[in-house]
Amino acid sequence: MSSAIEQLASSISFSTFGKAEDLKKRIWFTLAALVVYRLGTYVPLPGINPLIIAEFTRNNAGGILGILDMFSGGAIGRMTIFSLNIMPYISASIIIQLLTSVSPHLEALKKEGETGRRKLNQYTRYGTVLLASIQAYGIAAGLEKITGYSGSAVLDPGLIFRLTTVITLTGGTLFIMWVGEQITSRGIGNGTSMIIYSGIVANLPQAVFSTFELGRTGALSAIVIIFVLAMIALVIGYIVFMEKAQRKITIQYPKRQMAANMPAVSQNTHLPLKLNSAGVIPPIFSSSLLLLPATIIGFSSGGSPDSWLGYFAGFFSHGHPIYIATFVALIIFFSFFYTALVFNPAETADNLRKAGSYIPGIRPGAATAEYLDYVLTRLTVVGALYLASICILPEIILSRVSLPFYFGGTSLLIVVSVTVDTIGQIQSHLVAHQYEGLIRKAKSRGKI
Image: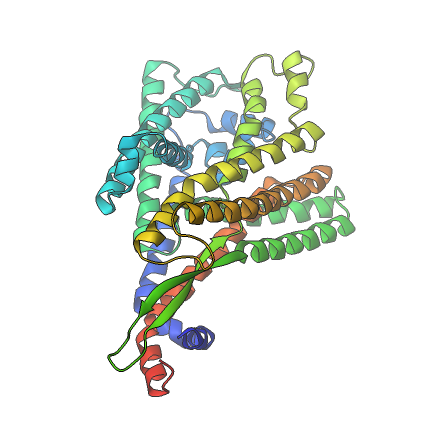
């Protein structure tokens, strides 16, 4: 069977894609949903002065605003109705997943199957509303304090503006959350990742144009630009290799008799454990958490470079040794933290025991859980170091040449990993489309 599947994967072509009507519908739906999302990133928030907001964003591009503006596809820089983007939903999802490990009620819901999953999703939505409302109120209060050369950023500050801002930004986040869920169920790829991916990719042409404009004006030499492009190509290849890396653990099922006149045979399969089980969550949360002090100082009145707050913020500027060391530590911490949330060795071992399967040479039950935890810990160490190297090496180099965030390790990691995952899902749909033909061909050749 495995050889037949390999034969099918190698035979996939454009003609196969043309016949997969369901796959084409999913792709068109995903593109249409992302277009709607991108249009929303240009609808401005009511009651603000866009010129003052753009000036403030340029002055604070080195803080968390620059990172979040990259993830939102420029929505924060324009202060649109989608400024909060999908981040409150991601935060609420992680909080709910964390609570499932400490709350017996939520843990019981997690084990109830589809009904429990729907209930947990409902709690996640409630948490998204709460977090989005708090963040939206903070943004409204912060906007009222922003002033520029032509006046205040808010045309009519007060309670009405804050209430309008909270309702608008929270509604925008809920709409994005719904779009992401629709992409996941009716489109291609993970909806949340696709939304962040589209925000980064949408501004890549502008970043490339800005880079070549720096070369044209003489701010960057041609050698530096060629070196940066070569480095980006190497980083992309490195990411693709590491994202596809996995450890396959052999799982053996009990012997089964396929027919009355045939001897009982055992079946083997594999449990794949990815090298990077945490995905892109650790760099995103590490960047946001690390740059939060610089952003708070930028909003405060004491954020000048001569003040002690400005002096403190200098330690967390790009390329500073303290910033780099803290960034690495946070990436490693969140890698282990999120991996522990998405994969439970004890639960996996219990499921294997209930199915009557086992790992050769390992006792079912607690011994299997310990073995899986041991393997997963070693994989997570390598995966955390991989994420840290991806995010830090470009950080060190690009901080010397002042290129946009979009050429940083975090953005490249998101773009490449989401692209690899989406291509894998497209191939899976194509394989499923031709599966019946594969079975008939394999039977005619006597391979199964």
